Every structure is written in C-alpha cells, then in structure tokens.
Image 1 (cartoon, one colour):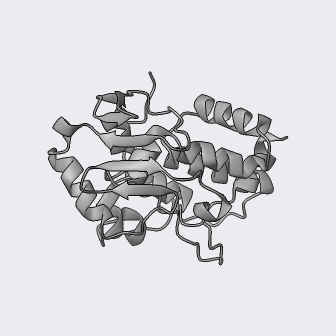
Image 2: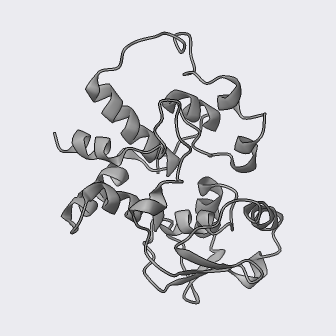
Length: 219
C-alpha cells in the first residue's frame, strides 16, 4: 500500500498551517513551521497570487494530509458525506473525526494521528471490548474505545496521556485517563470543529474551511 515517507514538517510548511503531525514537538520552538513559515523548496518564498481553484485545492490537501489519507480514500469519505443528510462539509469532518485512529489521538492515547494509526494497526486498541485493527473504522454513539491492558504500560502511550492532560479536553468524548478509556458521549457537531486547527493570520478562527472542499469536489 502506498504511504508517505518524506519529512512531515515539509507538509505543514507546504500547506501553510500547523497540522500537528509530530505531536509535542509541534508545540515547541523546534517546530519547523514556526521557524520557517513558508513552503519548502527553491521557490517556497515566491509570492504568487493564488487562483480560486488553488485555494480550494490547498484546503483539501491540508485536511487530507492532516488525517494522513490518500486521495482515493479521502474522495470516498467525501462521497459518503455527500450522500448523508445535513451539511456536506460538517458531515465530512464528522466522519474524519470519528475514525478510530482520530478518536484514539483525540482521547490522548497517542501523541499524533500517525502514532494512533500505528497503535490501531498493531492491535493495541479495543472497541466495545473487541480488538479492531482498521484505522478508518467509524465509531458510533456510545462506543467505548480503550487501550488494551497489556499496552497501557508502553512509554509512547504513557507520554501521550501525560501530554494530553495539559491540553484541552474533547467535549464529545468522556475520557477516563486512569483506565485509558474513552466513550463517545455525543457525535461531534459544527462547534466541535472550531479547535481542529489554530486560526490563521487573516482572521480565520477555525483554520479549516470545509466549504472550499465541497466547492472543489462539486465541480
């Protein structure tokens, strides 16, 4: 299966936003985006006025890369969101947020979504008491996600849990950090997507403009 193997910091610099792909490092002065907030490469600092299509494409690439997905899989998620009732953009972000790897990360059991994906694939995460090894598995209301008892002692899990205690909680998850367990108390709504990425310098508080992704795929 194809997967990205190049430097993760290049992705953040290319998309012009912190995607928090390297966990705690992204919150320190060592963050490459904080030191060089421009696209990598020889022409990274060139000033070109982006076209409307370019703006839409970059927004889609930013979200796709934040969740570590390939284009084909991301397109399938959009088509599924488009068939659902409600606002397509909110449906898309709700599906992405309720992926098992994303929930594992948001619950504080992994330091990044990439690390959470590896934990799931290696069988360290249970859903309702049963081991699930599919990162794209969509959790449902009332599902209980927990790290397997024999895996809670892993250094990477302990460090992630300690770091998560110092960050903001997730409103739609009921998290028991002592037992490394999280319950889906409610499905994420529009206001829950506000903190996915920090705001940008142009005053965009949300950081993600899902309507641009809908416009891109609706052409």
